[in-house]
Length: 205
Length: 203
Image (cartoon, rainbow over all chains, first blue to last red; front, top):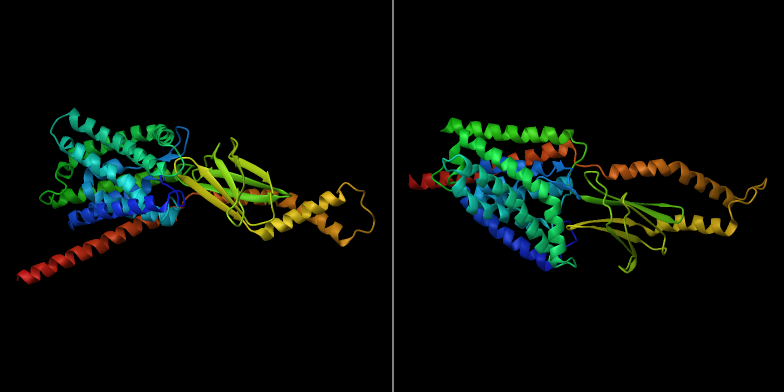
C-alpha cells in the first residue's frame, strides 16, 4: 500500500506531510522515556512486516500491522510508523522520501482511529469482547488505510470507487490475517502484561 | 513491575525475530514495482514485476521522449511483458503505472538506441540473407558480430533483468532494525537529559 514517488501531485504531498508532521508532533509529546522502547519495538515490527508477503489475491500485498501499532501506542504510532516507513524507503526503496508524509498519514491515522475506537474494549476482563475488538481493530485499520490511499489517489486521474474497490479487494486477505494477529497479540498481552492494553498515556505502566 | 516490562519486550523482540525468520524463508518479498527494459535489434522489450516476484499484468506502460512528449502507450501481457519497435531515436523514458499508486520508470539513453537502430537499418538495407562473399567488408563483419553478440548476450540480459527484481537482503533488514534501536537510544538519551536538568533545577 506504499504509494510510489511521482504518482501524486504536490498539493496532496504537502497536505499529507503537514498532517503527518502534526501527528508526529502529538505523538512525540506523549512519548515518555519509558514508552520509547515499546515504540521502537512496534516500529521494528512494522518495518519488518512489509516484507511478509501474502500470496493470496490478485495483487501484491503484505502485512501492515498498523492496527496493533495504533492500539498499543495511540498517537505515538505516528513517530513509530514514520521511522519505519523512512527506513523502508531508504533501504528497500518502498514508497519514497517525498511520499513519506502521505504514506505515514495513510498508515498511522487509521491506527489512531482504532485506538480510540477499541482501546476501551481490549483491556476488559471479559472473555470474548477484547478478542473481538482486537480482531476488528486489525481488520478495520487496514480497511481505513485502503480508503485513505484511494482518497489520496483521487487527485490523480484514477476514479475513487474503482481504486477503492481494487485496494479493498486486494487487501481482504491481509485484513483477516491482521485481525487474527492483533487478536493473538491482545490475548497474549492479556495474560502477560495487561497494563500495556490499558492507558498507554496513563500513570506510567 | 520492572521485570514484567522486560519480559514483554523480550517476547515482542522474539515475535518480530520469528517474523524475520519466516520472511527470509519465503521465496517472495514485498512491495515495490519495477520495470526493466532492454533493446534487441530494433525492438525494445520491457518486463515488469513487483519486488516479490509477482508479475505486473495488464498494467499501463507509457513511453516518453526526451521532451516529455508521449510516443506510445500499451499494456503488459499476462507475463508482465510489453515490447515495441523503437519509435524515434531519442532518450526514451518508459513509465509503468501499476494500480494502487505503484509507479516505476526506466530510461534508455539515446546512444544505446542509436547503436541498436543503426544495426537494424543497415540490415534492412543490405539484407542479411545474401550469400557471403569470400572477402568481407568491414561493415559486414561488424554486422555479423553484432548479430551473434545479440544472440549470445540474450541470456545475460535476461539475468540482469532478474537481478533487477531482487528484494531486500537480510543485511538491509537487520540494518533497519539496528537503526530503529539506535534511534531509540538517542530518544531515551535526550528525554533523560531533559529530566535530569529538571531534577537539577528542583534541587
